[in-house]
Image (spheres, rainbow, N blue to C red):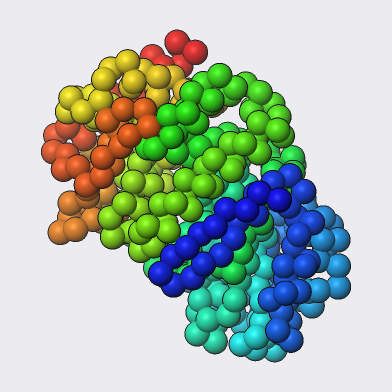
Length: 368
């Protein structure tokens, strides 16, 4: 099995990343149990898709199933409370082991519940979406949204291990899969030119769910995420690079009340905006910007931008959790495979790009 090691200041753990990796779940869980009960946390939608596979993989290891709403609009403190109350009623003690099965929302909420319940119980992640397998399940970020912004309440809390099995993506809706591809594109832009080149060559096969190619892509993204968070667990420096596309992306999610975009789709728009800002500021060659925009467009149709003024966008960006004194350090590409963190961008440039963004995407789509 292909195993990626994550080594942070607070914990070290493995990401098992390969087709069939779900078969490793029971022996890894049994090794960790230490006499405690195993509780599976998932959503009704996810459980309908892969519950039988996970149950078969765990066999008789788990005692209780806790299901909760995994829509972004339900990513709230109230959901965490409901989970913790269900754990309490099931008499989960400090030896309990939680198994989070689902996408980014399941991982974020279950991770926050694990960090909070009894001041911390152990958790493992079985991500079932592409974005979770390459990104959100790795690195220990947990949290929930407020009406004022995305992920404003949370904690860093590392899992015991992660199982990233590409076979779990077979039942993923096409839109959800494309949403994850935008995060894969992100990894190519910020630090892996070889991955970016691979995506340009093989995107259509990936969209067709070629498992061999998908396995390679997931491992490549997961390795980059593991390397970054191992060097900077709490986003004090290097880890900020993972926010490429997220400055505009998070603002879009907040301004549309988490109902219009999937996370990766919002990031797709955010990457287009950040790429254009890099061109305007003469940080990025135009030919690289064209390649980035074209690859984003080839991933599939992005939902249309809502009617949001530049002033609204800037105000929401200023309230992002990454802001300092109302200013955000942008992540902008300097070349394919190389990005710069903490870039100061003038508001009027953001407003200019925001105005031009629909046309930028339209042009990129016509060239596909």
